[in-house]
Amino acid sequence: MRTLKGIVRPSPALIVAFVALFAAMGGIGYSAVKLKPNSVRAKNIHAGAVTADKLANGAVTTPKLAPDAVAPYATNAVNAMNAAKLGGVPPGGCQTGWLKASMTVDTAPLNGTIGEPIGVPGFNCASTADDAVQVQREAIGQYTVTLADSDADVAIASSAGSNSVAAATSLEPGSFLVKVWNNSDAAFVDGRTFTLIAF
Image 1 (cartoon, rainbow, N blue to C red):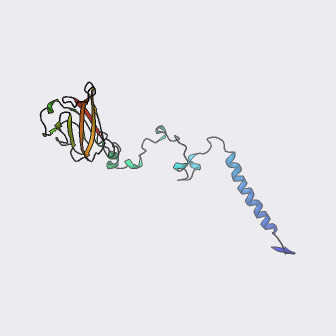
Image 2 (tube, one colour):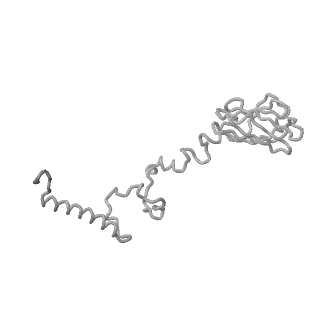
């Protein structure tokens, strides 16, 4: 470059180089704008150029997948088996952090059996043993429900009896006191059916 009185002047070669550079850059932008719809073919795309964030939502649907396409987490038998599970648990199994137990208890067989726990049918997420759900009559209309190995500490109860109400109170994790009373006079009552759901 030559200077003339302190002014730097580019050489003709540098000017030509800049013009060529700007023409080339402008030409790429121009050609990208002028592409015809559906004119880009698979051979025009470099491997790995199309990433997940460049795909529009819903752009890839099942009919567009090849018949031999394999999901990344179903590439072996273990992962393929897990695909049929919810969080690693079969659909009918216990989902951690949600419902921990449920049962419907007919209290009629418990009349006169204070202090004697009996096993009742029900769902206990923590155990599948025959005695996983036990009920013990404490007094008229008052029953302790024990869930083996369960850490459930919240429950709701309802009564299926006519004109009766049920409520559950947590005694300790996995144990609840259920009270059943008449709605009309608030007197505790036996022989009613209640439902308990524990979380």
